[in-house]
Structures are given as structure tokens and as C-alpha cells.
Length: 177
Image 1 (tube, rainbow, N blue to C red):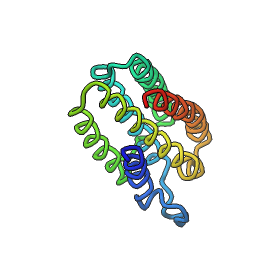
Image 2 (cartoon, rainbow, N blue to C red; image 1 turned 135 degrees about the vertical axis):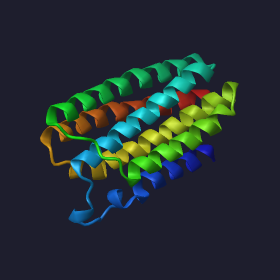
Image 3 (tube, rainbow, N blue to C red; image 1 turned 30 degrees about the horizontal axis):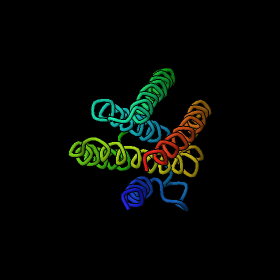
Image 4 (cartoon, rainbow, N blue to C red; image 1 turned 90 degrees about the horizontal axis):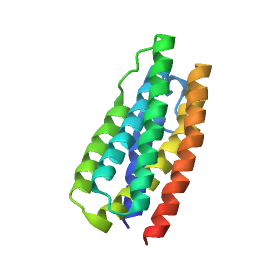
């Protein structure tokens, strides 16, 4: 039940914004500065979750997964910051990135109340759902909406990495049952 709730929540947050609705008109598509902010925000969210897991996780596989999340998301966000600096673009906060941040803050508070195996299972289940939702948004909305070729390429590279994260999270989740 927790996994289904997390997946539904993450998907609702990512896809409920008018910026990310499928079938939105061209005028409703997110701009490159908005896409950059959404992508960076999504990375920061996973960095913060990984830091929490490094402190609270008990299972060695969960700890190793959190280390991977921290390393990979920090690296992608570093590349994103270098790109926006190179392009002289200021990432633009928007309803989607604000909703993501609010949901993540609530989720971190919820996870903080858990300990031991309960934390490990909840953290990994959330990571599965979160990566599934982010990957879906990247594939269907953010990458197709990106106008700048370098931004699109960075998003495509990130998608490949994050699809691997989703598979890794699914494997760890299956091992925790």
C-alpha cells in the first residue's frame, strides 16, 4: 500500500502542474529556465533523501543505494549548474518545482519518524515511486519541451542514469521484503 500511495503522490505532484500535463498546448510547455529549475529541484530532493538515509538506514544495501543516489544526483546537478552558467540562463522557479519541494519536505518529515527496517523499506519504496514519476516526466514532458540542445542532452543523460536508479531501487526493495 505504501508503494502505491507514494507512486500516486509523486505522479500527481509531477503531472498535476499545468506545465506538465500531457496534451498541454505549446503555450503551456515549460520554458528551458523552468525545465532547468524542475530538474535541479528533483535532484536536490533526492540528494536530501539520500543524506537522510545515510543517517537513518540500517540495511547495508539501503546505505549503499543512498550513497549512489548522493553521488549521482550531486554530479548531475553540478553539470546542470555548469550548463546554465555557460548558457547564461537563470533557472526559473515555478509551480511544479514548488510543489515538488513541498511534497519532498513532507515526505522527509514522514520518513524521519521511522527507524530501522521500517525506515529502510519506506525510503526505498519512495525512491522507486519517485524515480518512476521523475523518469516519466522527463520522457513525456521535460525532454520533449526542452528547446536548447545541450539542456535536452543533459536531460537525456540524466534519464538514463535515473532509469538505472529506478531499477536499482526496485531490486533493493525486492530484497527487503
